[in-house]
Length: 191
Image (cartoon, rainbow, N blue to C red; front, side):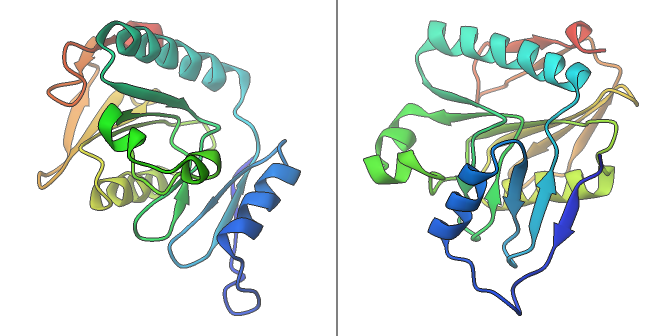
């Protein structure tokens, strides 16, 4: 199923609490909301994409448990970005001090923070242009490192603050650089 985007901003002004409740009451679907208020409704990931996401998240969690530098999040986690958008990257990580500075209430819903690292793994139904715009939005809102992994094309787009996007073709591994020190992901697991 392709994602469906609807615009309600001229009809309804949905509060953050109402958006959170919509997401909770419709847990078989994934929702994101743009800074303009457009709501995107997505079906759960297909099995193949879910398996790849799981492999990536497992490696990120293992690295984080060893390093103890922050907190990892899976694709079901929503964040309230500084520009007002609600986004759910396929995998993300936040530096410990930044996460721990949030209130308990902020952590219990869609945390008002942009992750330091985000990863989006293209599903067969995803639009490259839409996903690239989402990656740019993460970068514009403070993500220090982002990876857009396109399995179909065997490409990885790397997003860094104040730098042009770097595209790697058929890399065997990818490094977390200084954001995720010593984290190296083996792309052979998902190609």
